[in-house]
Each structure stands twice: as structure tokens, then as C-alpha cells.
Image (cartoon, rainbow, N blue to C red):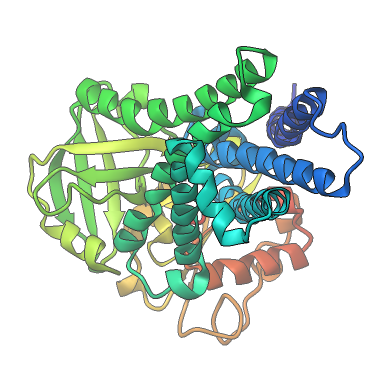
Length: 447
């Protein structure tokens, strides 16, 4: 089998797996609604009963979407390998908006129709639900917490907050889920008893919450105990960035690939509450890992002062920004600024013809430039340094394009890592040059 056939077969397999996971969302929602219908939920002739039934359907679909959100952000390997971390996070955010709208529809229809049945006002009916039990009070509190999380996730609000504060508030969503779940099993007529619907929903909650607990909470602690990752060296780089070398046991068992990133938590008094995504800046070794960080914020600036010997809790590896996403025998690796770190790591294992394009304001400010140049020479890759003040596109005022720098770019995979606006410009240029969308690879660390 030729190299091209291997890449094509691997891409098809990943595509089928990704499409299957996406299709399962609709299938699970359809099964949940089918159980509701089978229980007699729509056996009525009164219009307001239909409205009540549609409110319950909205709640069922909202529950499925919330469980999907938990699974997508659980960092489970079967999700990471199919979507990649950035796409999983993007789908998680998009689904969350739909889920919240459906929650509001669910609550509005249930409350309004119930108020009509009982001859109460909407406010009186809302309070009347408290008589059903503590689980209804908890469900209303959960909706309030969901509202807070959604409001703080809006771009207009989120852009004004530091990540750490936003993330702390965002953790309320897990408390909200815990508050909402009991009313589904204790009050929803579809779920009473131990019938097929009850077991169906129990299985869904077990898979979603189980994945979160295992891969977000248990696995990092197991990794820390197994690999004993610690800071071994803090190395200032000529451009002002800092490389952190960490050593440990059997690090090859992590399964990390050049180009991937991990979430790093340095367990000292100053940093133990914060986890940040940084890419490996060289290929992982059996006894060491390295990241390189540019001082661009409080966390990255303070990291230059982390003490040697500090224990490290790492989650991952994450993302498919690596050789596993290749679709063609040749590649173009593009980086700007500290986005060079995964590109430098990928150079250690890249196969086939390869062109590396680095966008820098000056060579003195370019992180790891000497290492990239040495690796490119060793691997037989072409290195192009686009140097100078910012131009109208992704390059300089000279107006560089991918097609002019790499004439056969349409037949290659294009890997892009750098600031968001710059990477958007590179992607647009790649598409204009004829590179298909599936051959353009990015990893977005936005939140």
C-alpha cells in the first residue's frame, strides 16, 4: 500500500468515526423522544396537552445535549481522536446554546400550561412546584446556575474577564447538572419505575459523567503517580521565551505525539490552582518532556520563575495537530510567534517533502529559530523565514502568498499555528491556493 493510500485510509477512518459520533447525538435524542411517546406522552386531543408534551420533548432533547457537552469536554480518547480538542470544545459551546434555549422552552411550556390547568398565575405556579419535593427546588436552582454560566460565556462578557475567573464561574455548570438531574428521574413519568427508559437514561448519565470523572479527574492523578513528572530545568531562550524541561518515569507510555499539547498544572503555592494549555516544543522522550512559553500573560510570565523540582500534574496528550491527521505525502508547516513550538516538535518525525514557513518580525525575536533551522537541515526540509513588519495579509508588505512560496501547496497538508487573526489569514490564503479544507490543520486554544 502506497503512502498516499495509507493517509487516505486513515483520514476516511477518522471521518467515519467523527461522523458516527455526531450522528449518535441525533440517534440518542430520537430514542429519548421515542420512549416519551411510547409512554403515552402525546395521546391527547387537547391543544394545551400537546403544548405540555412539547415542553417535555424540549426537556428530553436538552438533557441529551447537556450530556453530549459533558462527553465532548471530558477529554476522553475516543472523542479527542475523532474531533481534536479544539473542535470538540467548539461543538461543546455550540450545543450549549441550543441546550439552554431548549431548557427555557421546556420550563416555559410546563409552567404556563400547568398554570392554566390549576388556575394560577405563572409566579404562583412556579412556587407551587416546590410542593412536589426538594428535587423541583433543586431543578429551578439549576436553571438559575445554567443562566449564569451562559451569560458569562457570551463573548461580550467573556472578553472582559481573566480566564481564571471565567473558568471558576464556568464550573457552576457541573453543580447545575447535579441539581437538575434528580427531577428527571423522580418526577418525569417516563422515568418512573425500572423500565427500559429508566435504564436508557441511567446508561447515558453513566457514560457521560463516567467519562468526565475518569478522564478529567482520575486519569491525571494516576498519571502523576505513575510518571512522577517534575521540573528538571528552566532555560531562558534568546528571544525572551522560556523552556521548561520536565523529567519523569516511562513518559513514552503517555502516547504523546509531536505537535500535541497538554494541560499543565505546576503544583507550587502560586500555580497549583491553574491549568494552562502549552504544546510540546520537542518530540517527547522516554524520560523528559519540554514546553516553551512566551511571556504574553500573567501565567506565562510567572512560569519563568518556577522552581526546579516542582511536581507537575498534566492532562493529555490532547489534539490531533500531528502526523495522525495527515492526508497527503507532503506537508507545509507554518508558524508565527510562539506557535512555532508544535511545528518545531513535528519536524522531528515529519515524513516526505516538507516546507517550513516561519513568520517573524525579526530573527532576534523568533523563538527556537536556531533549533528549527538545524532540524530542517537534518530532515531535508525547506525553511522559509518571512521577516519584516506586518503586511496586509499574513506576511509582510511584500505580499507573500503560499502559492508563491510553495507552488505545489494545493497537493500538501498545511499545518498552521499562531495568533488567531494571523492563522485565519493563512487559512484563507491556503483555500485560495486550492488546498482542500480537510488538509488544513489548526489547533485553537481560545476559551
